[in-house]
Length: 240
Image (cartoon, rainbow, N blue to C red; front, side, top):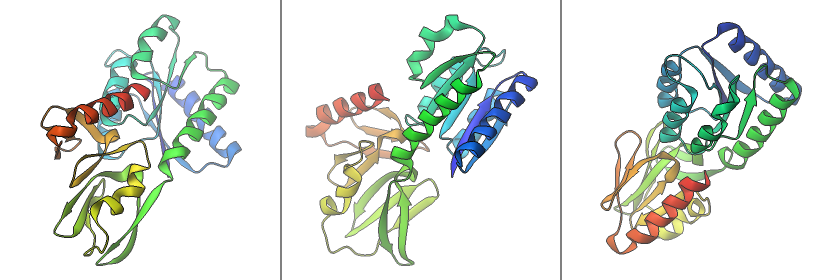
C-alpha cells in the first residue's frame, strides 16, 4: 500500500492539504495511507521505521526546514517523491538539490496539487509494484523489490535482507548470477561483488571497501570493479 507523509507546522494548513490529498485519492480510486506530521523530526523517525512513497513538505518550519527534511529523506530513500509546498518562492532553486518532483506555492491550488500527486503516483507505480518470487523452506515467497536491501550468496543458498527481516532460499540449482538476473533488470540494483547484490536506494555511504546500507549492513565491493560500481552509483543518485 502506498504511504503519503504530509508535514506542515501550521495545523490548519496541514489539515487543508491532508483533506485535498484524501479527496484526490478518493477521486482517483487509489488506496493509500495518509500520515500527518506537525514536526519534521517525528516524520523522519516514522520514515526510518517504515518508508513513505510520497512526501508533501512545507518548506519553512521553525524546527527543521523542508530542505533539511528533504536531505534526511534522501539519505533514507532516493526513490521517494518529494513535493514542496510553501509561501516562499525564493527557496525554489535551493529545493532542487534534493531532486523534488514539484514545488507548489501556497495557497495550494487544488488542480496543481492533483497534477503533482498524479505524477508522483505514476512514478512510484513504475518501481514499487515490481517483485521477485523465491523458494524458501516455508514455500514460495514474493518479495517486492522496494523492500529488498541486498542479497548474499552462501553455501548454495541466497539470503535476502529485507525491511521485514532476513529470508533464506532453499538450496539452489542455478548459479547466483542466474538467480539475481531479474533483480539486475531494475536500475536500483547492482552487483558490486560476485556474492552480493545491493539495492542502491538503501545505500547510505560508499567508500573503496564497499557499501554501507541503512541499518548498518556492509556489502563489500570487488576491487577490480570499484570504478564501475562507483560511477553507476553516482549516476543513480544524480538521476534521482
